[in-house]
Length: 567
Image (cartoon, rainbow, N blue to C red; front, side, top):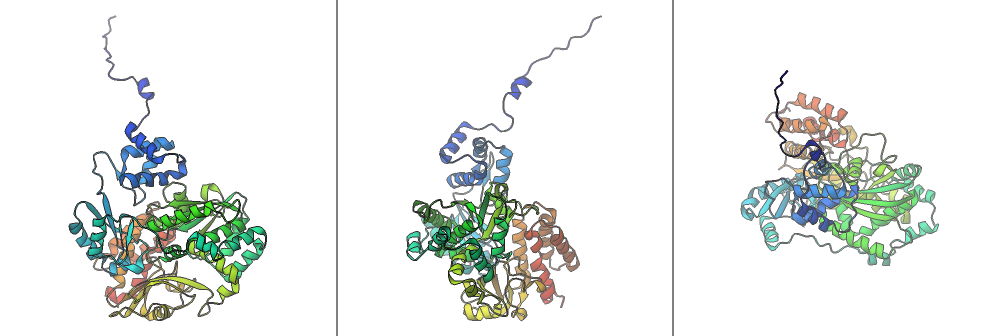
């Protein structure tokens, strides 16, 4: 029986030959050579992915796709994994094939609330035409310089009280780096008795239980926002099986907050000694310092001072101090998101339990602290817990560093008694309201801490005192509004911030912040729908960003109905 013959033509490589070649994007040899040259002898470890991305970004002013593929090969990672990390952070500029690279210079103008009140919108409107196409102008989230509003960054150079003329001059002169100066350096700190307390602790002059007891007696609590008692945290982590690690949060991304930067620029070794004492007490051999990327001058300062410390350590077998650089993500101020970022991943908050004190950095028990919490350790141990606790007003104990910005005559970091009221803070520490401005409202705890009217300006400012009013003190970032401002505009500014900074992991926060912004940008607010949305965000968001984002909106409805035409 005759059967038709069907000819088979072999076109191209066989399936077997295709299997022998790697799938996906092929690595460009030139890009691979350039990546290898830039990384040099740096370890090719997974947790250094963000550090290596910064190396490429700083050199090329962007992250070309070919170089991301090459970096993935160097680190033995999937290209998708490198790409998802690079696109998560604001300060990485991924350039795909066929796309133009960004301008050689970027000017970031802070669009945070304090800077908006000081005229940032006018700068953003006029700068592009003045600077031309050779300079890219971006609106940035809070850059931690609210006391010098409006603030901007020319490249990596911070410009306080920015004007069109100063930004044009800086950009034209190519001043794009920050040079730290005026701080207490390592030699001066040692000459004034610095690290003596640490050496005494290691030598056995002080025992761990007595040191922790002094801190507990002082009432010192975490000063990054959560307010967890410091001494109790040391005991909890110390009780966990070693090896243990430590992570210091210097991300400070809450709009209105800048106290950590100010203290770091003045006296960096005071907090380092506090961290080393904590490491001794808890039994920690490695300390990670996580610094927000906008603080370029602080990073240069810390790198230089840590080099001095390592060259002439105050004790033998000093714990290793590792500085890690953020990449522009507010969410990394949340402790578990920060830990993910230190590990070289996207800054996505973890579900809890387990808590970071149990399973934290690299799966180890981790002591996590805010910068300022450690800044106080040395002084409290030298002067006694009773000294710190003796300060306070209205039945509160201790001292608080308030970051004050907005419509006051003298903004800045104000060290004041815990429990002081905002009215007292303005009058006694800020020189009163600025000329032509009357006290109208205030944010007691930054963007997420809510908004209160001036009529409620006699509430003690401290942990646990503001919750009955739907607010909290957080990191003590106080933004003062006057009759020239409105709570509605403040709520819109903060919600824009939260929408942009949501990590996107959970729907209540990702979709909720976008929906809330759309609702409050409307001429008439749907108060009932906003109330339902607020409750869902509070109940179902994974972390504090989504849970606290509705605070300013709820406060406007509750305390400023006249602005909505509801009074």
